[in-house]
Image (cartoon, rainbow over all chains, first blue to last red; front, top):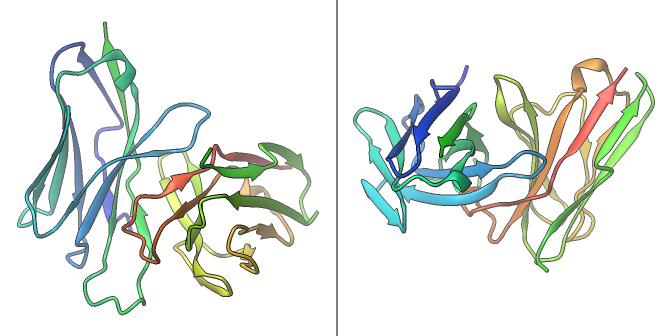
Amino acid sequence: DQQVKQNSPSLSVQEGRISILNCDYTNSMFDYFLWYKKYPAEGPTFLISISSIKDKNEDGRFTVFLNKSAKHLSLHIVPSQPGDSAVYFCAASAERGSNFGNEKLTFGTGTRLTIIP
Amino acid sequence: EAQVTQNPRYLITVTGKKLTVTCSQNMNHEYMSWYRQDPGLGLRQIYYSMNVEVTDKGDVPEGYKVSRKEKRNFPLILESPSPNQTSLYFCASSTGVLSNQPQHFGDGTRLSIL
């Protein structure tokens, strides 16, 4: 049962345009979300996160939007640059009321973003 | 330099031959975790540890063991490896004890079990 889903395995975007990566989740207990970026032969690196008490978080060219009612989040990259070409994973955790009983982090399957020069 | 170091980076071995993948972090992080990455399945958590001597199962713990005797080290042990454990493995660490803290990942260990 995939609780965090990234339905687009790949995405190609022209350099300078906006890249939008999507992520859906099914577990209503998830209340914190993170995006990671992964280059080949390297481990994932943290990109940006958002708590469920917010609906938007921005960091430079990267913005994450959270729609709790739709159980959907998206990562916007604008403008897209060639160095953004990577695999992007969204991840979710459920900390509310966990009482240190639920510290698992659940990842999606990833979306490979290719920026076309 | 702050880093998570995994060894070996690559290993080809045979079914049933016990192996250990080491993981060490130099950031004094409390939380450490192991993941495996498989095509179409993304990253799945195997085990995690919130502190020394505190470990717990992730989503796919079967066939694996871990230990956390020291804060900096979190080895992954495959007592009797099988071909379905062929995968790319990542160790990660973070500050605090909760999984929502951004994690620092190692560069991965590619295991092939024949």
